[in-house]
Image 1 (cartoon, rainbow, N blue to C red):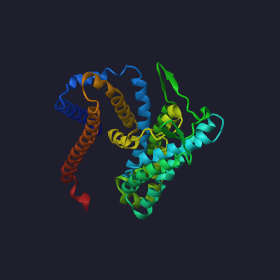
Image 2 (cartoon, helix red, strand yellow; image 1 turned 90 degrees about the horizontal axis):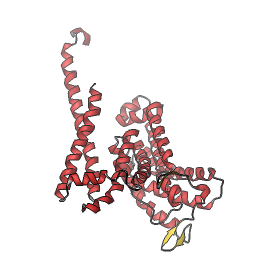
Image 3 (tube, rainbow, N blue to C red; image 1 turned 90 degrees about the vertical axis):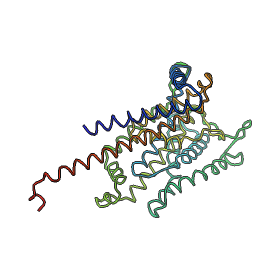
Image 4 (cartoon, rainbow, N blue to C red; image 1 turned 30 degrees about the vertical axis):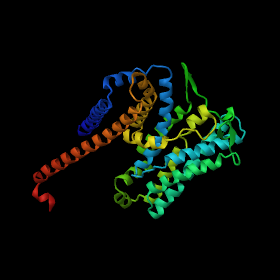
Length: 358
């Protein structure tokens, strides 16, 4: 009953605080909260907003899952950004170079992306497991190196091609594309189904396997987990390599479903957004899915705010306030529940028989 109360009170508190803070932010900016809310809500069935929201949510969902795998063990993989960009670039080069039948071609591109993402995080994983180097420092440094490596790989002198004012990798033939689903006046990326499968796999890994138990036990207490026979070094390595492999898939929905090549102007920032959505979803596959949909919808509907004279940048403030409210609300509820549990245990101690302790 107490767990049910916490599961209801924390989200309700988070929603209330987020709504209040967003309203205050809108009022300070001189905008009407009601106008902003109705304008954003009216975009749900407008144009291709729904389709674009689902497509963006799939990208955000994969990025957040990559982050959440590390979070389960208190590992902060802030390098998802670099991992997904390098993986998308290498996968685009391989996909545009080789010739294979359909399906096999697509599968090869996906495998290359996953292996590249895992390889890119291998160095921070080894440093963390064998030398205790903070994964935050090492992965964020690799983000900067990733930018330079991508610039080198797609030069016209290496694997790139100059097209107009942009530099791009060789275009991926149609045999390597991931077919989408036509809906109304838009097309849903086929990789949306892959994102859903990843979510189920994430849930099964954490809740139904021994490794998932060891991962969560190590996150709760490394000392207790080690005393129970958990190999912390092996768990760190596997967790970070899995995180990097999933991160390698982040760029593929757009690469295989729309762009079919990696260019200098390819989207960025998904890795950092994944961190916020993993926090918003509390590392739960369903919570992350809802957070990804909300985040993507706010992104796509923000354009309409310009029409009513409200700067679209207010959405960025709203997204930040929502994440902050969720984190604070859950922490407040967790502390209240812990203190209540301590008081309950303290009240029960005197009632035990005196001879029970001897």
